[in-house]
Image (cartoon, one colour):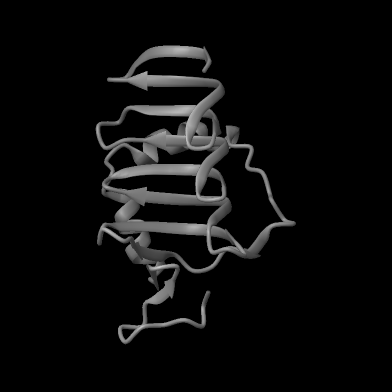
Length: 149
């Protein structure tokens, strides 16, 4: 994955461009979500992140900016598998939405915390990118649902 670069030093893998960025640029993207630090601090001790050691190819690389096929920008810091998919533990940011938790084959999978730009959030279990298992959904700072999804 790291050997395929274009003329702008973007890493190109399966038509998606990756560019390593500074920790400061990543932190700036994280902090654009006004609620992120407050909500993350509430739940960080409860995030039981799974290690998929057998499938991890790149472990804790520098933060990256991802430019997808639609030229939308995302940020990611964490692990990848050999296919270049987000896989393992990480933090993903797109359009002021943040997910901190486990990934499997490019999907939210396992325990995770998702925070949108309005401060609504879900903390709990995920499977294939969807709520699945026990979780808590908060909207407008009010408990909407706690239980099994």
